[in-house]
Image 1 (cartoon, rainbow, N blue to C red):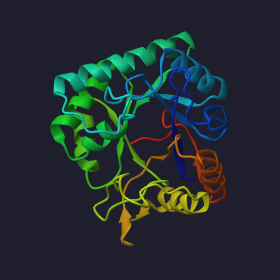
Image 2: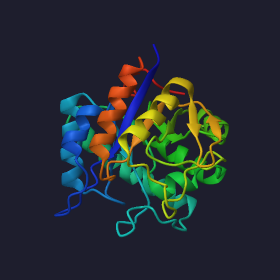
Image 3: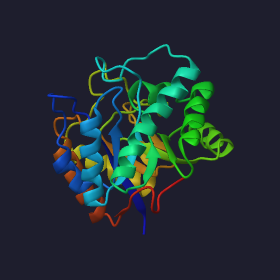
Image 4: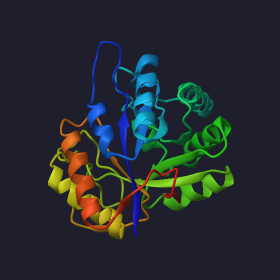
Length: 260
């Protein structure tokens, strides 16, 4: 039986500001990427989100980003490689403390936003991220974008002693080159649950993604992501999970069965 992980970015509220429907979405996913305070989240939100994931048997991952609360971590920052490494180590370490408090294992690290996208095809930056994750603890998986640069990331992961998990996005449009369409462009975010679910089934069962020009891209895919800050996130994840299960796909946390 085909197995795949279904993950969602969570824990993105901050202080008095509430973002996402974590308590509802968590019922439908198998892994949670939890913001670590730099682009979103705060200690109280981190603690509550780890506890929520633990109570539902959902795998926990750290979602470190650039120190950019104002821009939600989606702006490219000119950070040094040393800053990238220490910023990631700081954020992952903070989430590990909450995992320890709730007696759950941190299973993966997925960079957020601009940090995630800037690392695609950028060997120095990708290596800095991988080194930070490897330093943070043994057994952690590194989540990265599936596609043309997967071989580079797989090699870097192996060299740094990491397992790399390749990710695709049913709720995001792709360029013909296999990268995510910039959020600044119309149509970059897919909010229709049926359309996203159809894409998810193609990704999970055949490793196929349709680009904005109609090109069919083929790639290795281990996990699918739904963004928690999309207004239709709950309907998206519900529809995607139901369609995947209807297609005979088993949903499994990446820490259990799925990996690259």
